[in-house]
Image (tube, rainbow, N blue to C red; front, side):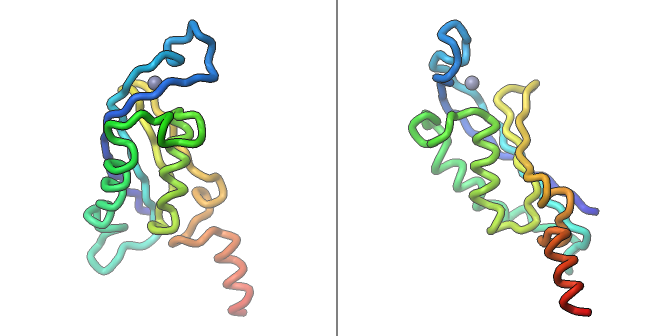
Length: 141
Ligand SMILES: [Zn+2]
């Protein structure tokens, strides 16, 4: 199995309003966010790659346009936690990049939230889930 990752960064503010008033994250503050996308494949393409890193530039554009120097509470429907941000980015891109298996969002050097849908991650084979692969093999018999 081949795995690649690419890292992106942006700056943004948020406040987590569902937390108690005395929790520091309930106050307006900012982070230098790191976003790490992971792609996986059992086979390499004819260039010896999982995906050309340059093909991931769309992710940089999306992050820059939607999140960079923004207030995340204004641009996200869900509470702007690292967890929800990871899921949002994954769901925006999994159809564009079928080999995408996880998105990690770091708010600080020591914390990370990784979103990865269980079925697709564990059982995905060349963009298909295990169930899809088995069903195809059954049809081919
Ligand atoms: Zn925060």
